[in-house]
Length: 282
Image (tube, rainbow, N blue to C red):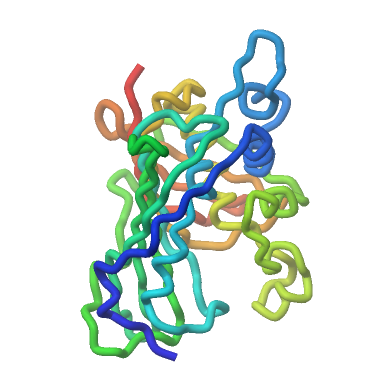
């Protein structure tokens, strides 16, 4: 098995995909929204129009074709490293997009390889809807003589200071069983036996579910719950989360329309760091 560093710049075949109002409702409850979030969890509440969470973009738009260009590897050795989204408009509760994925970086980290894929999703009429950048670390695929790329250590500029805002949300014991219905059926998040093979005493929460919980907190704390004001979000996964844990998102304003953030598990450890979000000021 070997990673192909020459894959940088290659693209996958554009893929059209769609989602429904029901998909948006399912995603919302998958990231913990409930009876106090009826604009996201119902489609027929009186005088409340349904809306979609901005982070739903992570489960929309198929860019998997780009991975066909990076060579062969054991999927079990792949770990999600970082995730970024940029919204060009408010995400509709139902719609379709055409998505093109591009391999934008392949770094040699010695013990593994980091692969970055950037995808751009446009509406059928060509209007940009959202972009995503994801990086994955593939253990055992380094050492091919490529560039190491940027350092993985990025300290928070406000680390150690009191956050301007702090929001705590609690995941359910069965959170992963709901979230998996939005597309990621990896048994690591549902099957105790499979989780044990990976070294965990029970299934862990999807990293992108933690990302969604974090997005909910940012939307609440910085955008007064209005997804039309949410512009972009990026962060790095730094520790697994177990269903049932509370998640505390700490936010430091970074000028008008921007903030830094980190997400912490129930014991205070950092589970999502190097976070940055942009939004339209009120």
